[in-house]
Length: 86
Image (cartoon, rainbow, N blue to C red; front, side, top):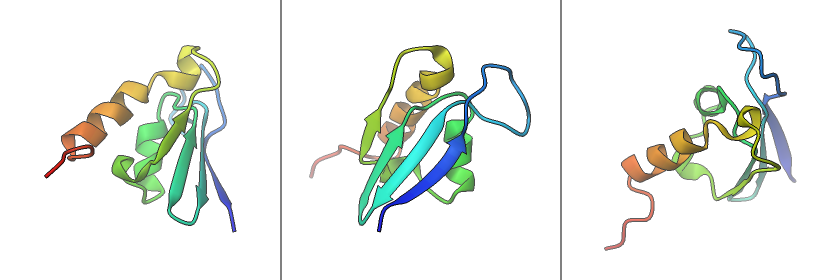
């Protein structure tokens, strides 16, 4: 059964209790992150999901409130060894 976790429902205004757009869709072992706005990296961790568990990323558009944490996600995955062979 698919599961949807709202990581952030989108606001460009910085607020301590809200994050930018980010939605995690899980199905079996697949984890699709839809958008990666400000605070989504932190909200992933709060949901108990490591950036290394994300299998796909879909950015709906390139406004900063939908994609600014993309660099955090990519670098966290690299730092934690995703993509290493051998």
